[in-house]
Image 1: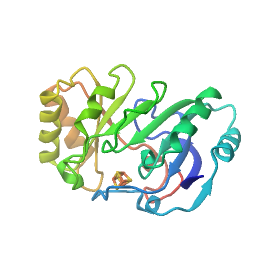
Image 2 (image 1 turned 60 degrees about the vertical axis):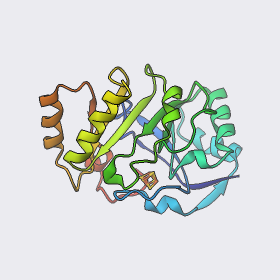
Image 3 (image 1 turned 90 degrees about the horizontal axis):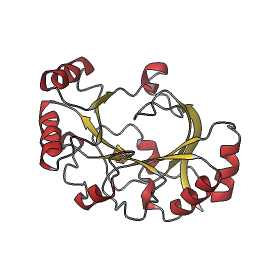
Image 4 (image 1 turned 90 degrees about the vertical axis):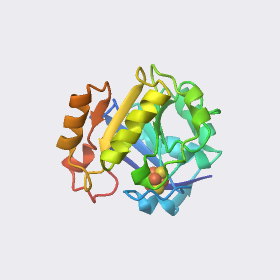
Length: 213
Ligand code: SF4
């Protein structure tokens, strides 16, 4: 059985898949406690379901075939690998949101990984497992930096340079309450960084406190 926080259907708010209707499977439990976490409710389990039951629930949203497995931290539960396998057999495109601190070694190649690199503002700047860089496919996977202030921005730029990630799919987003997106946009343009700036668009469509969107 997998421990879950929620399963819902919404508009994908982040990554290069932003804007597309997507089925979200939010597993519960997280090994980090980021300062800006907007899914604290996912630390606790709301319900449990077998992989088979989860697949049946995704069928409700036919013909949509885009699914995101998120958390919490979804890689904390071993059964998630069975979920990947079954969703793949059913022809779903699978996005995985993970916090970067757990090994990606066993994540199958068909899963599109969206991996956080925690900046100092999160309170967990040393949580990223550097060995995970070898499992990031620069053609399809994405690395995400959530930026609270100028220090986070400089730290992220240094990280990209240090590990030669300029040709990877890089996402920069702001902690809305702490950094005006316009300021981040101006920094990126001034430095001519080849990163994708993203806003969590679900927070503009619905109230930012709304759950299940
Ligand atoms: S890794 Fe994600 S779910 Fe966990 S505390 Fe940080 S922001 Fe919240």
